Length: 456
Image (tube, rainbow, N blue to C red; front, side, top):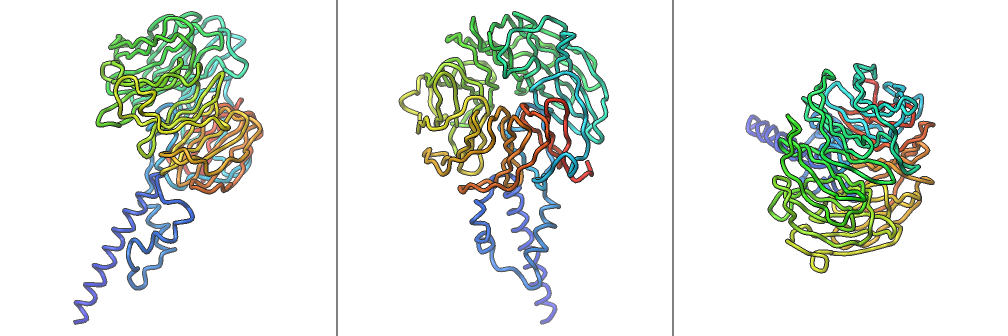
């Protein structure tokens, strides 16, 4: 009889561990329950078996099941700023939780990307008119190599732009970068040893505010957005050779700087982006347009995000908008698939972020907000920094919002406004952070900082 009870107790413990494991995986995905509902989660997973203590079990399970990801391009592995990792630091300064700091030559607003032990980013040596690709060691920040991509006169740009604003992208074998060779876009491919594989110009490019077009990868193609004040296009190039695979016309001919996002919605794969007086969806295999929403303004900078079945847009110039779009239509869907539309405290440059059933954003002037994805209901509006250019990232149920002064505001994700910490690096910051291998990477004006527990 005692043996049967012992067997049942072991089985009970194992079953409870499996349930907890599933819970931790779910919470670590960044799509967990709101913070104020966390205590109710335990009741959903049944009574705890004897001697199985919740506080002691959770750290073990989080450690065992925390996912480590690469950060391969603009806004990470899903292109939306989210990380599935847990244990990312929420408190740091110039002396604490700094694994390493690497001084970066030149200037640029591009984000660092991370693949295994290599960190890549672009910069511009303005006095020498050189645009370069840098490779650093993730372990200690030492420079592994530097390659000149372009040597050409500096283009005209907006004062808040840079000459190295496009974030690179990698598939773990090659790295693709984009720059403007005055009047022509340039796309170049390097291998991980820094050898040039190919260099192509997909066409002319004109914009009085400068250039930013971060490439994205889809299957065996690298896709770049060419919205501009002339004949505009989106183009897909072969990853291996640079040969053109397809080209989609952008008829409104208006400069915008939005990186496309690949999503699964409406039973199909879609390449979605705002820009050039519209929000539109394309088939990423062919470039054929699926649907389009006209407007609601002329120029766009921020990328879209997708959550709870809704596509979220923030824009723009000369008017400012927040919009929730149902990405399931075909053709012209301006009056049929816009779920909600708001203009209060909308932002232009920083991209938003999604968590659970909420969207979060911060506008250029530092006013942050949270809305319900399906309805647009405003849950809170609060001030963060004085001015924001970088886009937020998320990990472990927290949202990270850097401002231009180098202070990162860490917020608790959920329906209530809660500041976890404010962390200052005492240097200007215009680049969006990266998260990989349990570490937070922040590019400031003069350095790249690796934030963690000093065990990369």
